[in-house]
Length: 358
Image (cartoon, rainbow, N blue to C red; front, top):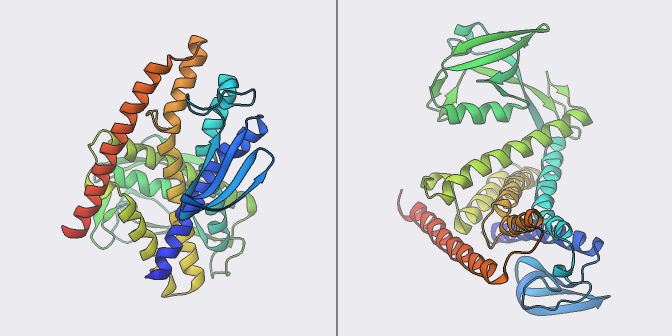
């Protein structure tokens, strides 16, 4: 229990610090004075001044922050302050945080793919008495599109099938260099609690994984390709889910707050330990990659109080060729903050209901 809590704290801290480091490195490269870069929150434990920046470690091991000169309207407005830079530079600094989360998510997925296995949207075995068999799909077929949507990795196929439910689908198949189309209706699988079309995908062995009988080795390019599209898949799923959360139309099973996150990471770590420490680390890295994509997407939503809200104001400034009125921006930031607080209550309430209502 204690080890799971420590692992969860470390993972969340890494994700938040990576986000803040994105802001930090672009600000530094742009000549902006970064007054403090902190690991952790709360009371300051130790600090060291290097150049214009104070590097500190604080008491609460949750995340961190990057404080830039002139970042708020009541801060200093010196020659190297945040507000003294062009709108384009400030936009780059704000976007760097979420982009660093996406980069970290990709790196985590790449590392995970190297030490495990990759499933491609290629048919290895067609299941007996399945929709795939009834439609005429064959081993060796490569699934290119579902309902017109391009498929790059097996995870995308699973996501589309889940969202589609049991409705009929159209598959575009590549077989011996020829594109073929098939119509079929997925069947619900009680054991896996999802809709399936009835086939096993081709599995490729990761660069550093143990060889598996009947599996070809995945090359560096294939691994990077898989990791990239896995990241994009999680970004897309997160954006769709958060859109429902922000409009309060999501079900309780679709979102989770801090309690759910701690439980998810802890459960994944403990489940992995039943097999090996390597499996536990892989589970945590996998969850971290998903959470990293979540954090990046969340901060890009154009809501005042988030990076996306600041980016929206900067885009308006670029179009208008003058900054937004500070009083107006302040009011919008306040409204955004209140909305986020309301959303946090909504999310935490959902967390509590998951614990006490089964």
